[in-house]
Amino acid sequence: QVQLVESGGGSVQAGGSLRLSCAASTYTDSIYCMGWFRQVPGKEREGVAFIDRDGNTNYADSVKGRFTISKDNAANTLYLQMNSLKPEDTAMYYCAARWPGGPWFCPSIRAYNSWGQGTQVTVSS
Image (tube, rainbow, N blue to C red; front, side):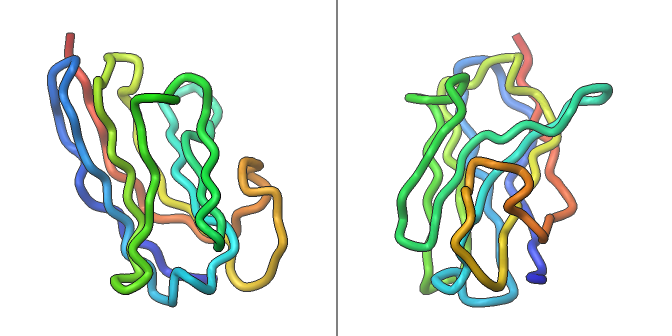
């Protein structure tokens, strides 16, 4: 498994932006899948955005056009740029990774074996 540490959460008004970061303890160019998930109390954890080792990305329909996932392999860090935030984006956001091995279907939560501790995002109307 790989150690993941998220940062960048906080409180913002609707329409605002936040950027989440996730520092990995190994080389991100060796990680087959990396992704961002979110969860609100009483609901299942849902996938938000995913990126594979080759840089291919995939997004949940609810965030397409507003969120952008990226990674900096030189810094071993994953990012989630969140724009045009809505109150329904309020959740605990988790970074996840699948390491070692592959290939995996990155949009599936079952692809992931490493999780960060989470960072809270709160969007007020």
